Length: 605
Image (cartoon, rainbow, N blue to C red; front, side, top):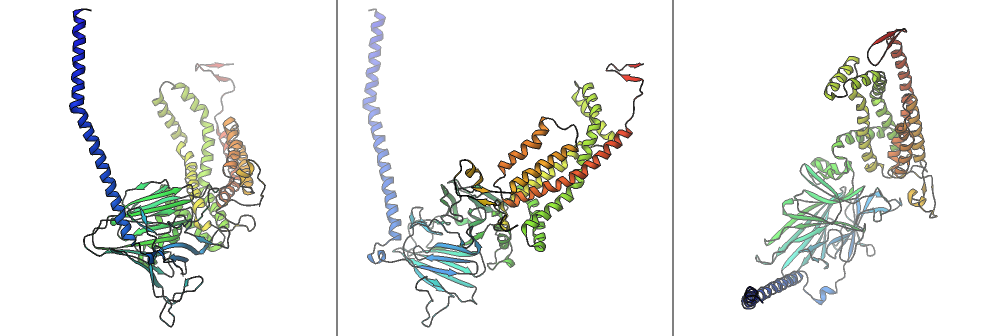
């Protein structure tokens, strides 16, 4: 072994020894100390959290045997708008049936509080996000009919409370006294409103108290309860703040944004909560569980003062523009609410909202005369076709001019194929020379597409179409597909695709689309290429499968539009035929003895 090798080994051993010494004497003890400190900190935090939960639980429950034996009672309060069932357990709502709305079964009222459990009810409260209030509250009433003993008349079986017919304002109050504070929920109702007011009050015994917050929730689920088979039914988180609004699919998400109100919406109904003072509300969390739970949790900021009283306006009812917009002007509602902007909960197509508004307004005016929404759709479609006819005619005339310009355009393209900028200049001169604007040919198509998108949203979400009949026994509900007959047998694929229902309107629509395309082709000879054939035959067949189950109101519009388009196209074809004959007559004729060759030279026979 060489001298250098021995030195290297000695040095390596020395370095290893020093490293072990430092690790053992200095580093290891420090790591152990850090680990102990971390474990102690975690244990302290855990103990603190457990103490916090015990304190909150102590606020809610005094553990008395008398309290455990209390049995909650239910009270049914009826207004002109709803039949509401309250429970003294937590002072919550366990049923909210809309009197002026019927379910798909036609005889049942719409239930807006579904999926109620022992720990989850509409407008239930929980403290610090963990402890749902399940205690039995003391219940008192205001402005309800009194018996001889000055007590509230309550039916012994139904627990229904009969309020005075001549009193429009009445209230039901729930109160619970805990060891360190008092908790009160008061529901203020009016006979003719879809909105009621909920006051939540917390009053501590002492100025100094444990800082807590509470969370208020919407209904566990709103109508319809089961909607998985209806691909047009939805569940959305909706909220608004001044000039902005937000609408998202429920996704178990927390929104830490300022808002004026927030809620849950289905296709035709909504449950909204509007704090009187939005600044005290901290955040909103939506919850969605496999279509069985669609709920919102609204959390208040921490309560630091001795007593607080928060007021909430709660809207439970149709997701209808005509109902929701009432709360934008005080004179239109009994609560004197201004600029509540509940109508922002209506589902619209954004920038096309103003077009939807005009179309709805026109259709509503037509309905006032004909009293049938199906007939109103047909008349509105006829009016739109008449208004758009000049544009369609101009487009057709433009296509004739384009056909005449094709040889000259091809000549320019060949001449300036290496000079694209010069080609554009020469093409513009050519268009100006013959008085043709290529953009004008696209305008009617763009305009019709905009109207189509707007109408799709109108017909797919327009509340007034819900349950509206066009032809009894065939189209009984314009918000759903038409029904010729249904069957119970499960036919693979067919039952899934058709929802076990034979519909006639999709077949009529497809036939009208095919005929309309064919007649359009007759007016444009030479347009029979592969792309044109696909447009004529392929698209209608694809649309048949896409639109088989769409709302019949939308399909009625498209079908009517196709049928009217057939008539218009026949007229346009005649006009185009005359125009072609006129252009052919005025077309310059070449000398029979002169031919022009590609080189530009002329040769005489």
